[in-house]
Amino acid sequence: MGKYTEQTKLTATEDYCGGHSSLKTVARRHSVDISSLRKWVAVYKMHGATALKTKEKKCHSVEFKLSVLKRVRDEGLSLRQAAALFDIPRFDMIGHWERQYREGGLDALSWGSHSCHNRMKKNQSPEATFQSSKNDARSREELLEELNFFRMENADLKKLEALAQTKKQAAHESERKSCLS
Image (cartoon, rainbow, N blue to C red; front, side, top):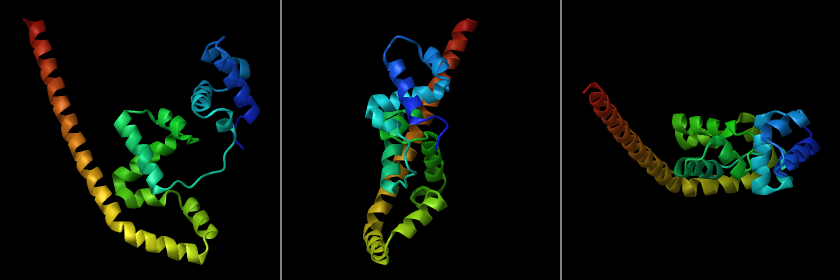
């Protein structure tokens, strides 16, 4: 069980959403952490009261993780915003997925935590395992294609970032020269 009860989360969130007090005041009134309250409010606004219920740990698919990372990158979402949008209980999980993907690509992203992988294996029948391995073999080409796409896109973004950095440095130089004149 988490640090706060579902009732505490709901009461504090509804109190803040009532619009009569600041985040800080409501957090103090309910003896909750302000960053937790901020997260609850965001999740509540996106998904309603059911999103504040304690959830069982989920094993997220590679496709889900990639879609989250793509939205973060494409829309410039913060990890907290993405966690609220996708109803992910801990925003730092997304940062972990980013590191995994950056360091080891799709393979690293597909494994997640070992306990999650073991739990999935236990719950699968031998027939389901065989079926998924057939599907994995069939979609390998698609996954490699997607990986190459993301690598090229990443390279393009790095070039764009380097160009922006160069322009920024040039602007600073001209600004400095104008100050010296």
